[in-house]
Image 1: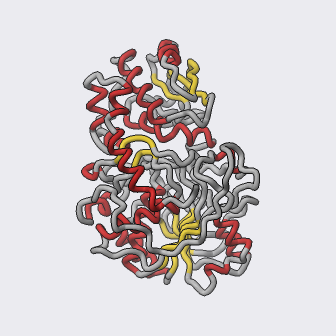
Image 2: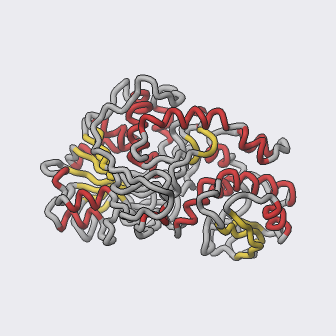
Image 3: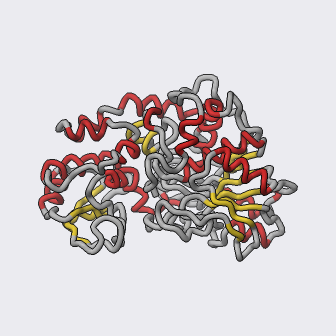
Length: 435
């Protein structure tokens, strides 16, 4: 995930509309109906009554909510029921067969690596036509909706809570296409696996790309359903001449509260992309994905991508320096890997493996900033930025790169976005569904 070029996925969409507005909640409160959110209460920790994703709720009702609609489903391998049956297969078996499916990055059935998709084809299991939504503009997707005869688009994808995970922006463009065609949009909500706190810089609209189209925080702390509500109210009108969705329905997760982590939910982990093997990977990803923008390996081609970071020429001093900082929730182990693909294929890399010691205290973005600052200081001949300034696309501006290059420390870098992050936290409040 987050491997497309800066002028690749959704580039046309990013420049097609008017200038992007800063997030403000005034006069933009959600006006579309949603099911009542059954919010769990009580102390932090495992949710005693369990968590029921929206897909399971609808399946338990024989998909009655979608009866009589011509449904297209935008999903991937994470769109499963708690018994691990894929929702398209379950709908088909229940006699509520969709008329089309749409696949994001990695594809509908998930056969492609980062930056790839499956193209258009007929799903051999169900016979349903599958359309490739990755790299599609809103106009492209609108054409697919019309060709398939879709009047309702159902979105069911589990993300990982990071702005640069492309599924968020596939959802946004799918919503935009629904405005163009008058289709209804239904989000089958799922838990945010890394919790409900917002962290990190807010995207500068001048840096809008397919890994960040709108000014949200790098770790927004919102579910897909909450983001959909925010997008419909604040951003779609900018791109559609003032129009919003004809109908937005967010089916909530039952028994869920926003401070829950994935380990609290009792749900099976289905990797949302090939390099996201565990929920711990997801907790670190909003920070360590920034290493994609450096010359260091972010761990692709190892057994623990985004947890093992390194490069030839790095040694034990990095782990020692990082551990001396006392960063909350993490411990660093000296580590050596030989990546099997991507950066440094077949070459021994020294570096660190990040071990989580307290999942609730970790701040992935601050942790990664500290790693970047210390790596630059310890290994100036090894550390560097990718020449295409991919780090600017990931962080949503040139600020982190220029501050690090100027010698700023971790506190300076993190402090630079605190005001904009506070404004984002306030702007998201009207759209939150879970207590």
